[in-house]
Image (tube, rainbow, N blue to C red; front, side):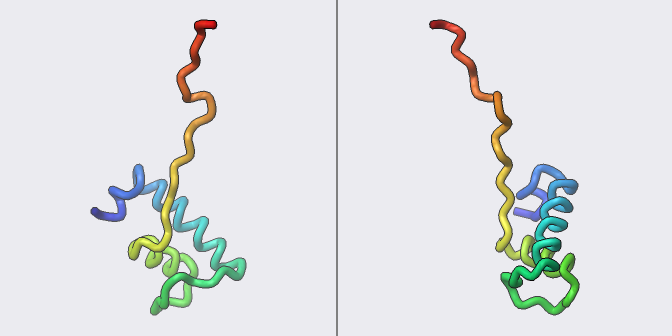
Length: 69
């Protein structure tokens, strides 16, 4: 499984990496030992190694509605 297959598209991968990079810049501890000191690169390495997961939330109102009383 490639990284792109784990996400819906490359845009989702970029969003996850950006969010994780912001967490790292705000003081969160890295989940891995990375060669880079840059938050964006560390976030990408964490995603590549499977330490960061992305859950697609259910869309509100997407559940079937029973119209029969």
